[in-house]
Length: 546
Image (tube, rainbow, N blue to C red):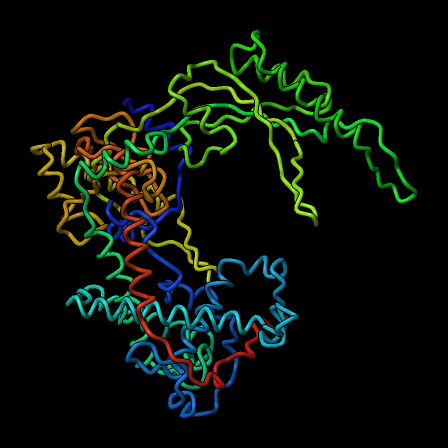
């Protein structure tokens, strides 16, 4: 498959950007969604929404009651209210960090205590109850995974352990920033009277252990070629991508007549509604007529429709869209092996309602017009690259957002250094090995042992955009270049095509996801939970003072 196919896929499948160090920890076997809500990035959430959860609360109590009252027993572990408060507050933080700007849309008043906001009038259930249940489930998951890790003899690496321990230093900085005398006082403000540096470190270690073992288990799942081909044969279309255009003709746009009452509300008779459906279908037929032989023809015909007289309507293009992302109404039509470029068809979009007697009524809401261009079987190879990161230095950090910006001069300095490194490589042996040696000694990414190598890069990989774009462009082994990202300048080296294809990547990820989910669910469900007293959980938490 040509590099152009990679480029088209890339345009449709850009994903969240990660730092290089995060990317290094998530190589190909880990690039599926390995992280559940049980494994929230505790440290990040703590720092992001510290103010939102009331860091200005004055702590005067010792926390003895919180530490000595069992809230939950998970397996053989007795979890105190103080410990469950970590899970509870982080459940709140997780929700708030993702939905804080839209809290009101979810019915959450950030200025009212969580236990005073009822979400189910019939039971009296509150937001605090919802977050407490999430905390209990997360605690169950984390302890189950951590126990499984210990049973398997798995432990954190020295680097992982040091990373968690060092995070306390960051917390100390935030404690100072928000006016607290020490870290313990800050943690108590965040998590309640029972919080301590020691227990928080233990909580963070356990979360990290659970997370790491979950990732390792996923990475260790391997599949034979026969496994992949068996799945491929069962559902070939699922791992292909399709390029096509579509246009939706809503029947409501063809409504005519109607009766308008004194309030300005217009209603339509059944006959008028039926006529609008007929008109929409006639328009759909016209858009799939023989004279439409290109996307340009289709768009011209769409623009000429009377309903679009005052708009600039056109079809929507989809480039190399995976079968799973295609509208199910016409997905199978696109995937038909007889499909050829220029084929077009229209499909009814319907809804079904059931009356009190169980009688079903099918209503046509409109029609999709679809124009087929091509199918990509995704059998092109993934990419292997090496890189040397020259990180930006200096910068100005916004104290509120934590965002660092760099001046043109600072960026230019990084670019100059990257150019010098590339020139140094070209002046030497100019081999892959010599590039790897430079990466180990000069790159600001990695631990200095991998030679800057990243393997099996696919259109779905979670790399920064420019890095991934370069890797998926049309290169041959030995090609080099320099690109910029938000982290600095990257000296790139194309190591070569992988033996692994994108199609196999998709199939293997699906198998891994299914097997991982089954193992995870079985492990967690086998863990017993006994309820205790949660009277000291911060159910009256107020997210903001506004």
